Image 1 (cartoon, rainbow, N blue to C red):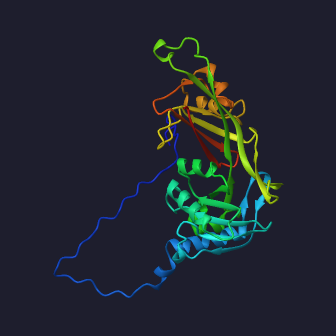
Image 2 (cartoon, helix red, strand yellow):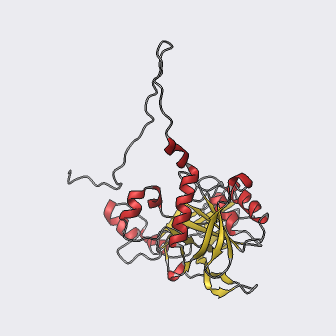
Image 3 (cartoon, rainbow, N blue to C red):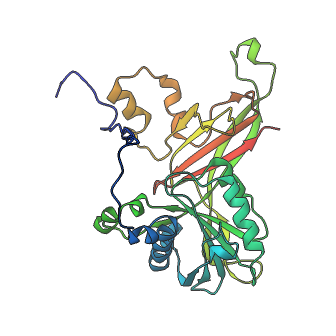
Length: 321
């Protein structure tokens, strides 16, 4: 290993689709017997495994709380349930339905809408709908957080579920984690001193992160059932980032913060490790929960991404209009 080189990324691989081979018209492929295992593979098989895992482990929430299932049955896709996959009851009695995201992509906005529509056609009407996914499209996450009339929750699925060997070998058997909803305040501020006159004409803004809301099973909702969304604090925010001109497609952070970092961690550690030239006057501010002032961008939207101390991500999109 070269002593004068610093590696700032881990090892990676490059994969390619195998080059296709085509038989000539004179050649004939040998007959192959049908593989009966194919009928037991694919999307339905994965969703059955995920349902079994969900029933066994439940969903872990804040402070060690758990959503436990008394029973959970697969909904038949042939009866019109294509985006809702399971229905059952929690151990506390609430009726619940589950929608699983895709295996190798983010759960999208359309699935949120259609699963909600299918939930409205069920009788009795469920109290809770949980979207379980490995990743959430920002617009889908925003729609879930904005849902009214039914408690809509996001659950992060452990990526070890994609590989059976990893799931068996890990020390923790937790596969589903309840994701919080960011609690963010946007306010107008005075134009900073020394701002270029070309940028001083429009309003300036600042974002403050207050924490994230979470589902508390120990609280009673207004209708007397168990579970309620309550406000969380700032103490468990490991990192958060701000895109000051969000285009509804890609998150491009322009400010990144590490509130839980110690005196030698976060930006201070990065500065030391890569010997970067950083603005010393801003380092302390980039370890807090209040953003630097910024001007409105052309898209008139900002996006705030929070990562808690468990590594669970949450996204909040705010319109400046």
